[in-house]
Image (cartoon, rainbow, N blue to C red; front, side):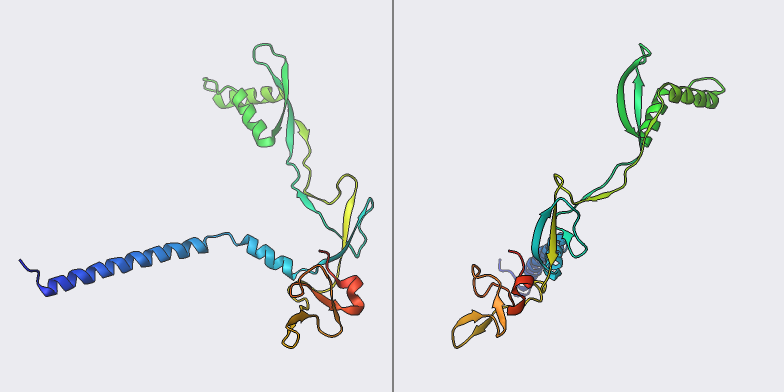
Length: 215
């Protein structure tokens, strides 16, 4: 039994549409995966290339001057207000251990130590029992400490001075068709002789001591 040409053509077209639909779906998933990727690293690179680079760093046991900034800084998030609690053993009635808790943890702990009771004055009993628990195991307050930027390590600081142009806007060597080499423009000099000619940074010759970035 032969298949009609029209039916055969329709089946082929439907198969092609199905294949195209699968291909489009796969590409859409790939696009979605790319859009969901974390771009923090790229953003950090762009930010770094826009910054004026460090041209010198010194180590000191004193504070950095107004023209310097700390090279290594980390943020200590601080602490929240809390309690130091002498936990009372239920059976002996004596203190068993000291525990540090947050305010919310202490409230939950006291609520757990207080019985709900079963009389008609349940709410009054709860209040009374809670007060008794707080008196038996009081919260000895621990003050909160605010966030601090730490730039001192082992009593020493690394103080850096920035200068010159950012890496994004720095003068680069130019290619010469005559010499077939890269070289800094007239009046400029390469900051590093250890770097490939095409990869170095050029600064004005008179400012080499102050504008070349640390490498």
